[in-house]
Length: 434
Ligand code: UGA
Image 1 (cartoon, rainbow, N blue to C red):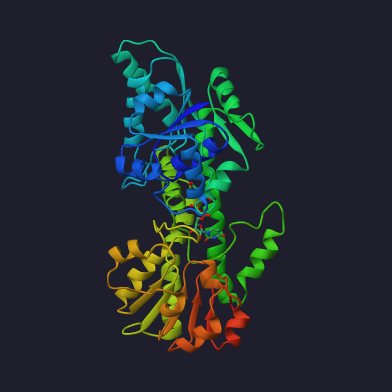
Image 2: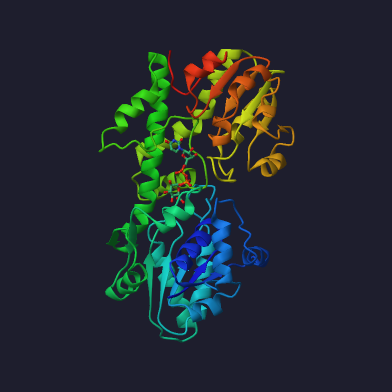
């Protein structure tokens, strides 16, 4: 099929590559000409392992075409995907400005029947809104052209984006009639993933509810970790025991210094704002957000309790991105941690394989190291913030020789406490009571 994907961000580019890899012809639309030019030369606007190679192949095969013309893309495509950003407003609600602009542009470009599919994470009722805006544009042009608006949320994870887009657990399609459903069935006819057809609003809520539920699992285990520490219990063992129950599942039960990224923090707040708007604020989600927002404070208290005043102390941070295998630092816990450490008048060194350039601009006071060992050279405490393989597998024996004091705080519970103690570290994890 010929498909237009409007918005060349994480979701837009990944979705385009996945469709192109499945044999479709994809027109990728964005206003940013520089970004398009780079994509055309197989340079991604973000880091995702293995994706640039595939991009190069698909550009060469002309399965991917980059354009800044919504009109040209809409006219040549049967399906129009909207994958623009929905950043948060100060209230936490999603800002739909880009969705509205794109809907208008689609309305003014339509010449014949098209299926418009919303991929962006959007508040409940956005499908209707998009339909209304397109209809308004057509009325202005005095055109009576039929079209359908479908909700088809994306569930990909950064760092696993391509795999998740090519082999999803499920595909959720929210549509309001058989015509749209048939188009979506045609698109996904070769997919091995089960497809759930719902109405539009249900599909929109599945997306928020899924992210909110995963965030709930994390905040649940993080709060329990605080309790475990008081009770002298190891939360990792408790997580394992819980996760062995298939009804609970082992994923997203890893205690740590909190979740970050461009999705969980934004989507939990947006769902909270939506539920409050209808007079039913989700109490459980209020707690989820609050626990996450205080997790770094709790972690800082642990550090101060162990090593005393941080004034003049040298702290080494290992990892800065919100999770490994990405260069993304949006809402990363490292940023709050650095802010707190600097407020406590500590000196901070840090190492991250991918995000140093961006963090340097925010915190020029931090010394950025070229390797993990360099980051903890002569420090009074080392803090593992992001579980990059390179950091987990570094030479910890050698690391012990480099540090001034042996305090080691594992913010992701990924190191072997026994081994670390053997190497001479004074090890503390998250919720690992002795
Ligand atoms: C998340 C969802 O997992 C995707 O399904 C969804 O499509 C995406 O948001 C989105 O809405 O676009 P992502 O933000 O890329 O994906 O990252 P996750 O792997 O979900 O991790 C989010 C955060 O939770 C990270 O900071 C991670 O360190 C933290 N986390 C995860 C924990 O603290 N503990 C865990 O057990 C798991």
